[in-house]
Length: 61
Image (cartoon, rainbow, N blue to C red; front, side, top):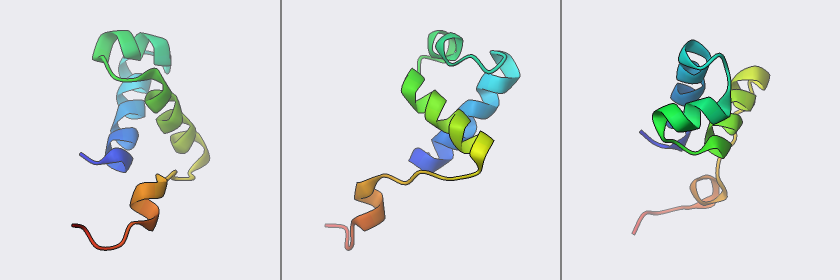
């Protein structure tokens, strides 16, 4: 899974199993809390955040 897919999956599991609490999801699933919070914000607003490297990179070496 890449970043966007993972950040789409993590908040779904957080909302389903952890009542939307990022700290609990961090403990249960072992993923970064900041990443989960970003995914929850993306899900709430509908705006997808793209990292600079993936947004502006051209040819893969």
